[in-house]
Length: 198
Image (cartoon, rainbow, N blue to C red):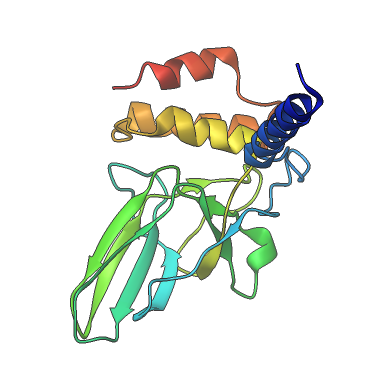
């Protein structure tokens, strides 16, 4: 092999390795039992949408035991269709925010808000801090970041396209999230159960 060919081959290998390293999600930067959104991808609402309020909902929904009650306002003259990405974190923002859990969606959430109007949405969120208070109507929430972390990304990949509805599936997903945030990591048993969800 000629010198020029060797140089080209080495350069291609370096670019490949750099690409792989760049795509690999980082390891967690938070201590187990004390989850907080660190790093990740910034999130911004679609232009024309505003949050009127966001609190813990009074009741469960089929896809979440503890959803957030979000009143979304469209300030434009056209309907806005948007989505929240899987892994989006919601942070407590009230006076007692340190007592409340961070919340997260595990699957993409699609929404549509008619022109010049307000729409109530129940966002299917999951708890991230087992020892802290659950969201309620007294605690406001706001958008944080979309997580980008190896263990959480694995969970999001495992439930992608799955039917997260009903007590069994929702409880399994919540248990899996707690294994990552408050336990020792996702267990093989839970991983298998998630893979077997319809």
